Length: 364
Image 1 (tube, helix red, strand yellow):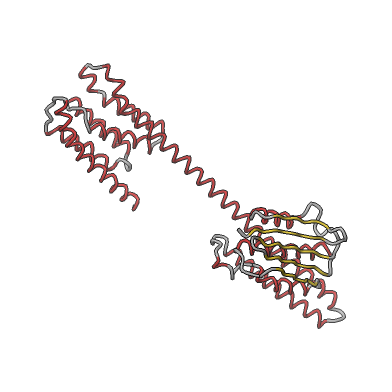
Image 2: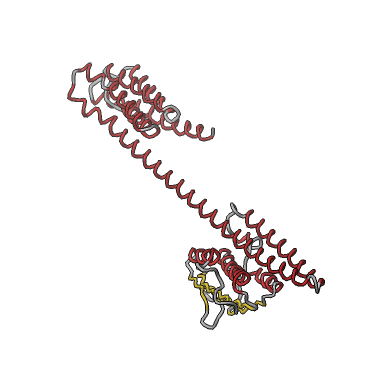
């Protein structure tokens, strides 16, 4: 409703301007063409201009009324003048707001009505020049409409691409959260089952660790899903994963029997949220792979804070195949995440045994 009122107000101003131009311009045109302008000619000029108030609400009705009024004006002997501007705008509106085929039919009919005065006067040679009053605004209107439609399609396509990227991002976040949580829980459950017959008091500690890990994973998953449609800004730093939660991650790994050492070089500082999250996910997924595939007893996480970048390196002392053949979804997800931020990613077995994951993330 607000849009309709705004359109009526805008077109009302246009009509008022055309009324003023029509009254003054028709008087001048009559003097130049040596034609006496009567009151009814002024009335037709005003009617044609005022009809444009509803041009966007009813383009077809507008062009029909303006064509009939302009034709009556010209057949009655009115001078060529501003009334044709109203006709031009009416034709443009039809071409701009209606399908091309329909607009062409109505424009042709309006042009035929407008040319009635040529048949009356017998000036057949004026047909081609007179047709420009319909052909030109029709071409402009169609061009503008097609350009706007193409722009709208591009915006819709970009919106679809953004939605797809958002779904992939969320799927990757869910994979990281659930994958790490389940791997840790599985390892702790195996420890509990192993200790339960002989040392039930230690099995109880493993079960408590399972409870805590599952609760933390569910909390992180809930936050991740809650942020699906929320912009990633600094205000979300406390709600999402980041390197500030690295100590808790290391503690969970230690409870599974994998000793993790963290080495930090450079001055530790706040990072852009997307970089902070990406660095944390690289560490998390790398340690998850250690649990799943490497069978390592120790792992080392190295963080290097530099002026324009941060590097993350995770190594373990397990089997050389720390990931399934083919790289697995975890390594592929890490690579895509780092590549999307303009960084570098490398993963593979080390010459002396174990596996290494390396990521360089630019801060700009």
